[in-house]
Length: 307
Image (cartoon, rainbow, N blue to C red):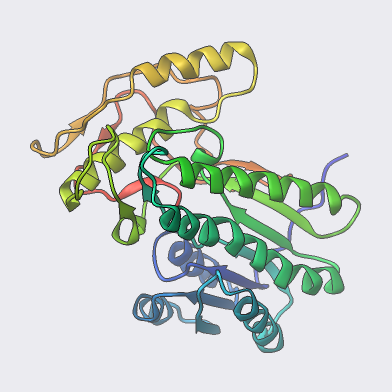
């Protein structure tokens, strides 16, 4: 039986991590479709830039998503402020850390997991009663293509994004039969500011030492290539073999000397050529994305899987 479409236009949208990247783009796009938006971010200055770019009704608050009580307070305030029913809550805020498992800083792993996973959990628990009471709406939790595959030096990030996927899938089953949805989104390479706040200890080869900004672009470009080449594939043996072959073709270092870097043409899995980010929970979020074959990557890009 076909699922009932989620009503979004004209309804209030709540977005965490709205100070830049995916969060800012969503806020601007939804506001343009007549949605009042309730936004939060830990970076007050960047959040203000987002607010200034929006013409419609907007509520903004500085918030660290790791703060469970802060999330509850924001939800209560936004619920009372909302000029229209809540259409969706997008738990988008995220960070990353680059380090090997053997030499990892436990504090940095905790920071990554607390923001990426517990921030999603706190946001979901803060808003779920509101959506249940009004009898409609969607919880949209942003994972990553790295919530579907593992990648070296990204163990904490991958673990946190896998956790978001499992948490949301469980919630989706619990909500079966209700009018409230739980949706997971797995973005691939997206140009965001996540690199500016990342904690880098090693490059993608595991080399120790401070990773300069140019080296970060190298790392992020190669990780972006992973998302494009691997897509998400399937769990069938043939798809797994194709992913393994793609892993062997991942560029270990992307030079920033030319104006742009062209990756080697590769054969993607049957699903990786889709122009849509991967989703679960019965909803499709359409957006254009480049094909994997002959992908040109700009060295100035701060794109990476995630936000």
